[in-house]
Length: 352
Image (cartoon, rainbow, N blue to C red; front, side, top):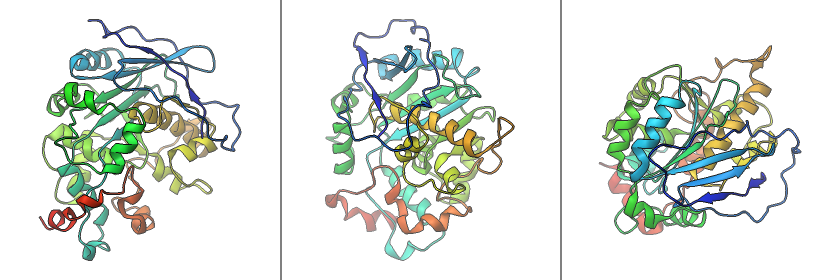
């Protein structure tokens, strides 16, 4: 596992003006070996705390800021006015309540099986957390914080897969706070629409195995169920996110790279900051892993060439990974084992 940096926390509410960026650097570490280190006891930090500060190897500081209903407008304004113009690479990760339904068995070999699985779950479930971090064209954070957006979610009312909630709770997600001070997804969608992060091909969105991630983002932006067909999904995706990079798809073009994000990050000597399975930490690792892989495998004369992987999603659409990943269905995406108590939903939901 990658080494995890220990955090100091700031529990007081953010002031009316967001604090300035603290200096930091790209956290790719050239000194780690390609062999994963033995598993270490990792400090779990709570997303209920507004700001966590992490020391970087060069002695500087990087922030993960938690965003709740009370500071949403302030933080989105700061991103819009101070970040996106100079940091057009946006790495994102979502946390969601698992997978509770799948299409009927007869559809498992249909060309759009993966998309049908994605749609029936995203339509009935609620996003829990979104992590966004920002970098310049060379992969440097240059002091830019990472943001975790924490949405309304009530485990007493909302549907979920139990193993997913157990994992997130163990990882420091405070569901009590999600129920009492979580972000209204409609409000977030409105602010995201005018943030400068979408509808602009100059913004490069970076993710790992991200069909579900984009499904939840489109649901936030449109306030409606996902399109019925996979083609319409991609048309809508292209409208809001004109330039996307899926690291999992990139690895399908490379020899010797398999497994999940953490395994790939270890192989590329990328350092994790924060707690695994919180969207902020995962988005930071996504960013550093993307640039490490792109510079190693997809660069020419020092410039990254994205033509081979731009606007492709692993396991969806018409690319070569659709057949490669079919046997895994949606089980390989995020937290996939559904609650046995919800298994009876599968047929009824997939038939609607």
